[in-house]
Amino acid sequence: MSIATVSYAQVRIVNSATNAGVGNMTAFIDASSNSTANSQPNVGKGLLFPRTDLTTLTAFGGGATGAPTSFPTRYDGMIVYNTATTGVAGVGATQGTLSPGYWYYENKSTTVNGGTWKPLVSAPTPKLNILTTETVTNTLVNNAQVYAIKGQFTASGTSTAVSIPAPAGITAMYGITIYKAGTNTVYDRSLYSYDTTSGNAITGSPNMSVVYPNGTYDYVLEYLK
Image (cartoon, rainbow, N blue to C red; front, side, top):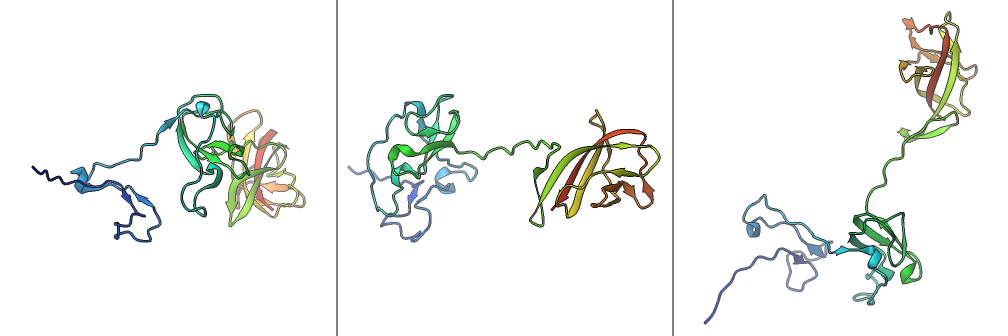
């Protein structure tokens, strides 16, 4: 008695000697979806990582296998899906506190246990807090860094010009936002002219300059240097 079967491989090992269709391919495993094997073109395949509680991983076992020039030394670059919700890894250092998700082991040391487990996520962009000292923003203009500084001026109610001291090293103005002091209400964002020597600033446009009512105003100045 004989039985004939037909199977479809979902994972193609590129380094296999019998796989001539993808010779010299950069990827050593091609796990792309095969619509024929899946029966439907909209059924995909994913890579499911083993789940690991890093708090219970207390030692690295085994040695290097394969070509010495390509095997990652001391587990540098190893990725796991961690299930621990807090704590630190049982071996190696931990960046912050463990949380569920993908973590990788970065180890440029000379010992197996000298690396650090880090979350495999992009760090969130830090909130920008503009104070009365110069602040480096997250903005570039033609590869030039934009800086910001917070200040305050008092308007007389009779002049279109207000005094805004020029930050050290300023070469060009990028923007200005003016608030009524003590409020979060934007009063003006336009700038008609600014003298970096005298600090004399006029907001508005050539046809309509702004005369600020008597009082105190806060501003955020953005500039290049």
